[in-house]
Length: 166
Image (tube, rainbow, N blue to C red; front, side, top):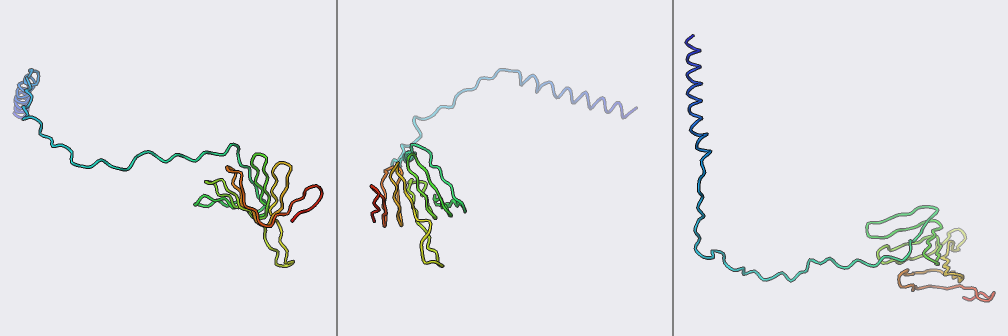
């Protein structure tokens, strides 16, 4: 009985202590702005950054997709090259390039093709054959850029008017 009276007394005191805080929180208070003494910030003494944040312009993509295939393997490297091994074939617009080994530099749209030497017969096989429309060129080495449509050819063999020229 005594414990229930003590419990009620503590509860009553607790409730009475809550009411003044509740009433204080409902009162409107005026907040005065803090007075400042003029401009307290100093001017910026850092020199403007000379570097620009503009990203370099991206290289123009090719006009048509480059279609490539190889019998043996196709290897892509981190430095932006694709290597085609085993009778590789690359097609772009009207251009077709076939060779035993073809390396494509993806960023610059350049291809490099060569054949391989056969150690048993001392001959070379898979020599690059470059077709541009109806014209066919058989070479030992070729480097060709799809964008500029220019290339470097080594040991060219071509056939014109039923005559083979070397």
